[in-house]
Image 1 (cartoon, rainbow, N blue to C red):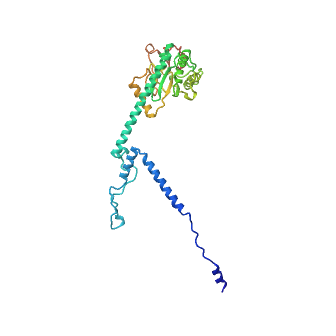
Image 2 (cartoon, one colour):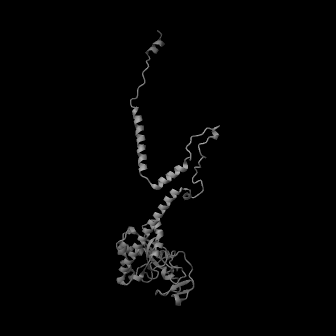
Image 3 (cartoon, rainbow, N blue to C red):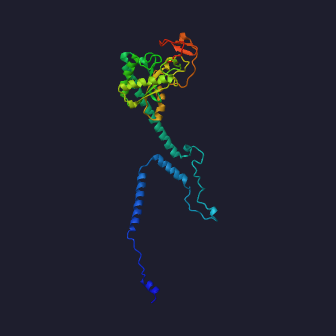
Length: 343
């Protein structure tokens, strides 16, 4: 027998090894399908009426109106699936989304919007009532010293604004040091603000008159910021949490009165204590209107922008103008007619 034949004879064919763990693959597939089934069942159990209506509307518009099978045709280019091809481009009708929805979805959306608006309105009314109670508490605290007239109240989209007119009662001319009466007012207000959960923003403002060159502060921005920080420091010393306090100087950029108005020189020279609203933007936007309907505070509405000061009659307004400088003589401030004066 040849050597080649012997080698072929010695080669044996072994049977392929059988994998006895193939059932694990099928078992894992079954578990995967069961998990997907339970996820779908759980998702279907959390039914959102609006989302379900939108889902149903999308299925209605996204499928053919006919369920017939593909009809026979002479060629592939003439095949028909029961309806015209669907344009799947976003909002292809060119109509607003609200108009492109079905009447059922629009009705649900309208009800949801109406309910949310009513909820926001009720929240705004409750917040205004809370602010009115704070006003009463502050007035009661100021009554023993007869200082009720030293503050004003406004309700804006930011919250309750307690205005402190920064005349000689609070700050001397071109000074950030609080006067005795001002300290009494701040010390009476501080315990009330400390009981509130709201943040308190202290905002310093001046009128549009520039500071004199010999003043301690560089300009009205510096002066208004210094006055705000003086109040912040006094509130912090009285026990208000520092994390709820902030101080900002706005100079004459946010006047309450136009610069030509008789009240501008003293009215725009102020410090505002803003009891910040914790509500959503939608509720905040409703606060001024709701406050106006329920009776406003004794402060004027917030004005924006400034206008140039015009010449006025000192006998009727308590102001005189010399050159480019208008000074206030009704507030008891001794004017320096040779240099600009700031309040």
